[in-house]
Every structure is written in structure tokens, then in C-alpha cells.
Image 1 (cartoon, rainbow, N blue to C red):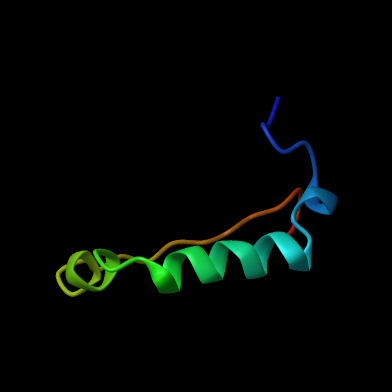
Image 2: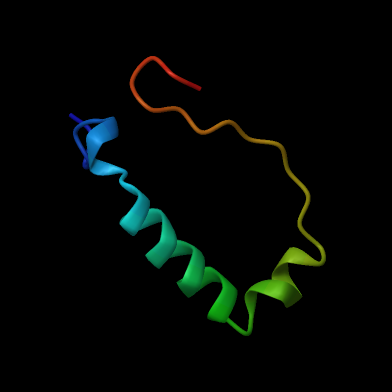
Length: 47
């Protein structure tokens, strides 16, 4: 079973908190500079 259970667990507030943490992280731009990848986010039957 998924840790989050369903798509309803991924609400706008959670996404905004996650975006703030990512944007405030000083190391991620350094890592991201050399990181390339393609990925798909999927929730239930929706990609």
C-alpha cells in the first residue's frame, strides 16, 4: 500500500510547502546544475 494512500492526500497546501522547501534549499541548485532526468508523476490512474 502506498504511504500516501490516494490522490486526495496531495493537496495544494502540501505542494506549496514542498515547493517552498525546495526553493529555500541552498544545495539543490548546485546538484540540479549537473542533474538531468525525465520523469512522470502519477497519482492513482492519472499521470
